[in-house]
Structures are given as structure tokens and as C-alpha cells.
Image (cartoon, rainbow, N blue to C red):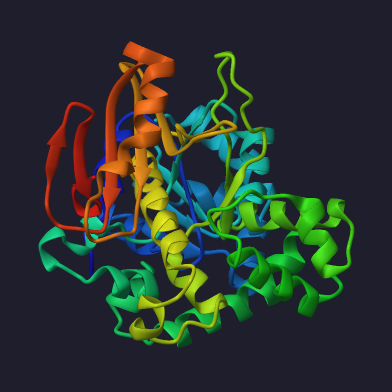
Length: 378
């Protein structure tokens, strides 16, 4: 069982918030996290239809039975719950409820309608490299192949079996719950095609042409992936600096093990020579940065820079300025890795407070453009 970084923020917020929601992908460890953070709280899972019906008969009465804390799993399955929660927490400020759910859209829709301003929202992604243990020295290719779902590491399950089950469950349950996708085999082809474009521009019309469907359907399907924490788009950085900047987002998955599975990669050796290894490595680093945002209780502050001549993989906007990060999957550092960073520093000057190259090597170097570090030291 792994200690999750988000636990500290979860416990901290419980001192002042009657309701906290924890969303994230299926099987990312939300239930385990909530139980570890609040071992004295009672637990109920609304994914079980019989339990859901039992609670529905008298929701307020059920909630009032647990003045010392209640964890409610898959809360989005009972929409009536949220208005009842509003009544209870308005009258009982010291009651505590933790809501967990794997569908961000359904959960947040109900929160917005009934509990706006009363809920602290947290997001839990699969394990981070730090949570696996920085001292473990897990080979890069093994991380890219296995991914970061707790079942792969803590339960010792085969990545192929974990991701095969994930995709089958995801298609059968979430896709049909969020939107009535009639052709599931075509949707799965879309999922695989998207994996082949990881780290590249998300152009709905281009993907639609390959699959023989219109771009609006592709956009709707992408929304499903985002809602279920399967894939996401990273928006481009924009600033009026006299350059023609791209307006097209890039696409990534929330877990690289799923990407490897969708690409048909079945072992570490195959991954080591795969043409998309660099893109998968980039996806991993982007997700590590995103996990850092979420584990601190913040929204994403990530984007990327691209003009007609240069691209910087990550722009991270913070209060003190901009962190610029270039990602390279090479195990050896090369001076030309800093070319795009120097270009951006020329354009933005003192706004850039940190420039780094994240690469797959182990040597930490320093130049006038900032630390050049391997991914374990992000």
C-alpha cells in the first residue's frame, strides 16, 4: 500500500470543509486514500444498486446517522444525494462527508447545482514517481510500459491484464453512462488512434478523416475521455509577443501504461525500440507535473509554447513567474536541448524564472539557463 501525497491536503481541508470531493480515474486509489486518511469514517459504495436504493429511500435520514464522518463512493450515481447534503451540512456544520467519484462531469455537475461553495474539490491521479519511491531506481522503460496504476505495482498484476480489464470496463460502463456511443468498436479504434498521436496536436478533423466520421463526433468522444480521466488536451501558451503562436492543443493520456497497452507494446524490450518511446516519455513527464499540481490541491497551470520556429514542451505559470521545461527521452544530455529554452528566454526575459531540460539520464547539470535534471528530480 502506497502513501499518497494528496492525503496531507485531504486531511488539512477536512478541518474547515464539511464536504470534500475526490475525483480521478477508476482504480487510481481514491477509495484507499479516503479510508487511509479517515480510518474512523464509515464507508458506503453507491455503485451497488441495492445500496443506492436503500439510501435513496431516506437520504437525509441516512446522512444524519453518521455525525462523525462518512465516505460516499461513486456519489454521482445518486443525484438526489447532493441537495440532501446541502440541507444537512447547512444545519450541521461539524458533520463531515467525503465524496468520491470516477466521472468528473457527473460529479461536478451535481456539485455545481446543489453544493456550490460548500465543497473542496481534489483530484487523484495514478501513482507518481515520488510515491513509488525515488530511491527505487526503476528503469525508465519499465515505468513507461507498466504505467502507474496501483494494481500494477501494489497487487503485482500483469500490466496487460490490468489495462485490458480497464478498457473493457471503461467502454462497457463509462462510455454508455456519459454518452450513448452506438459503435463501440469504432470508439475503441479512436482510442487506439489517439494513443498513436500522444504528444502531438489534437486535430479533430484529421482524426475524423482517418476513421470516416465527422469532427464533431471526435470532439464529443474526446470530451468523454476527458470526463472519465482517460486522456486530456494541453492548451497552448498565448502571449502577444509578435510571433505566430499555435492555437491547437496537444493530446496526452493520464497514464502511460494505458498508452503502451493501446499501442500493442507487450514488454519492456519492445518499448525500448518503439518509434513512439520519446512521445510516451514526454507524456509521463507531463503527467508527473500535473500530479504535482493536483497533489497540492491546485488546478493545472500547465501549457506549452509553439511558434513557427520553436516549441517548448511545458510552460508552468506560477505566482513568481514562468517555469519553462523541455522534455527529452535521451539518456545523454546534448547542448542543443536548450535551444528552444534560449529562444523563449529571449522573448519573455525576466518573466522566465526557471528553465530546465528533463531527460532520461541520471546526471544533474547546471548552466546559465537553469538546472538540467533527470525526471526523478522534478
